[in-house]
Image (tube, rainbow, N blue to C red; front, side, top):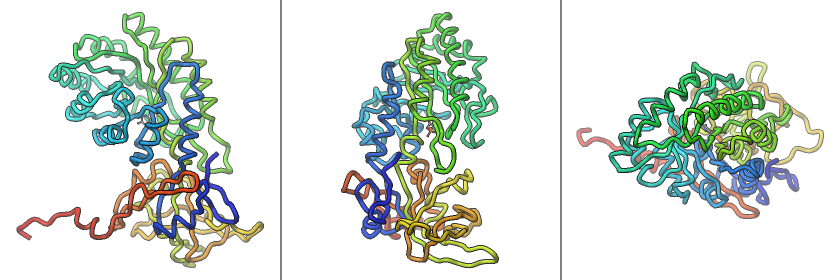
Length: 421
Ligand SMILES: *Cc1c(COP(=O)(O)O)cnc(C)c1O
């Protein structure tokens, strides 16, 4: 469920007509719903009720400061994967003890910043990284709390670019080597091993791969405890999928995910961390765009929008599907048409949908891409010198621009010309 519904014939974001936002900020723009973001966080939090847990929002899905401030205020933790994300977390008000640092290539600078500013734990992914963190921690006179990410060699059955738990992926250490690597970590005085981390991929639409991976983690917990490690925290990663196609069968709900976690890991007396990103932000956002032209081609009609692949790259990058709906509600039984829906960028890949059946629209009409709140704005670029598009946050009947559209001059003046030119 989200808060983007037709009311009085106009798509609303909560209580605000999307047309009203478009008049103020111009198109294209991203629009997020506070109520939906809040609801999704709470669904996870409630799904783990009764277990000691922390829901750490994976900010790479949507790292706007306003979204982060909202999450921090709800009591969420946060999962960061770079020094920039760590700085965002601190700026948004997350206390260090609620910040988890993931990522396969943390630099010494990033480690230093997090150890100095405060950190719940580092999720380590390799032995070289382990040695680097040990050295950095010792140089600061600190002990770094760590989990080690294991690769459970599970097929997440998702898109290959977002599958991370197979042995051929770059992530984590092979679970078969876990005992050896945990022993090495325990021997390093700058590290304190607190638990195990696993993350097998994104947009999973089935609980089985999670359950399989978590069973391997449960087994490993027992083995490592027998080896003398104080395993007290399990970071289970993110990855629960969302329904991009409303007509398709729905992925499992957070409550079902939570029940599975309790069943597989509930008797281990561990603190549970999860790192959902997409499920919190995805359906809490839309991308609104205007139809510029309707161009009739050989046997197909092209709907040319003012949004492009630089604004929302998921269709070009992952072949992702987004529902696209007119902002003005079509009359009941209105005629449908099949469109190739494209942006103006000079690449054939700048195609959002091919032969998409949708209610007829005309130049000047607004359309909304649903499920665009995660991996949308954060992956945008200014390719073709199209300035980053604004982001808007709605709460009830109010809305605010939470990132303004740069002017052409602001975009241009980020470059500098050397004096010899
Ligand atoms: C990307 C990522 C997440 C979030 O994944 P979602 O599919 O957005 O829930 C969580 N943890 C790690 C380590 C990640 O890389």
